[in-house]
Length: 423
Image (cartoon, rainbow, N blue to C red):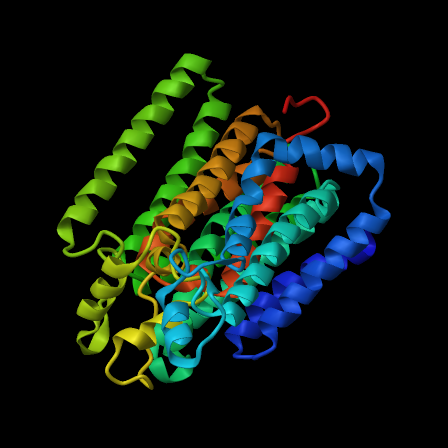
């Protein structure tokens, strides 16, 4: 598993640090590392590793393939009545074939499919590799480090815009939110080490590193980000505390259910209030204000979107149709809006169903786990943050955020089961 472990670390670092640095090859390198990890894990996996993977994903393994299958279906030839209107226009103009595709841009959708497959692959690699507790800790440290660096970029941009590019703030916000919750897990790891009489000096050092990382990420999210990102991070923190309280107090199933329902109702009330404060489409209410009066253009795009969308990854291509100046860039206001344009209501619901299924699996896994419950708890909190962040900005569309989130989810799933846990 050494090569698979190396490939996992390479995918995390290359997809985050290199993209923050502006390297053009960061995404291809991250996807290549994910492919290498899958190959290495497949060749070196034993039956125990395979059984561990099946126990970790349990019933959620069927949800993991929903998004890649949906994207692949957009690449299949269909009758022009079902295809994107651009293919009917092409037939009228140049006499093309009597069929088309659901996607408006085959190349961009192929790239999106490759990224989706890389994300699912990285979840599997992380599950198998982090079966070992020592490797799981190191992966947690790497994730905490790279997300803290990303959050520092946002802090630098907020304090002095000349020190960091504005185009990276969306990604830095997303990674900062994930980093806050990951570094909380690092602090819990340090506390657990101290409780089990590990080397006290090392536990203190780990705890201080987690505290510094959490403070930097908290400053980035709560000080320099929008309201939606701050609410999402707060929900993640509350979820971590909820799991900690239920476990520490050893609450009964009925008391734990009542407390969880109360927290869920409270979150729903907060979200309803925040969405009511905005105007226009629900997909744009938490998103940053668009410059140059582009909001009406976005509203028209959303109104014209069909059930199956215009093709995964094709937001930029479709946006040119709605602009008087084709050379003007129309950035995606939020990940949810981009997914809706790309894959329609069907794809948006499917994507959130995948996140919700993984969140439930991790939540119950954290409650059933022993001393390592902070792994699945942090992963569940990251997914909780993601559900809100998807409406708050475009950071989740970046390959770095997708691959880091996949690694976090895989780490949490792997550590959500133990020798005596029930799956």
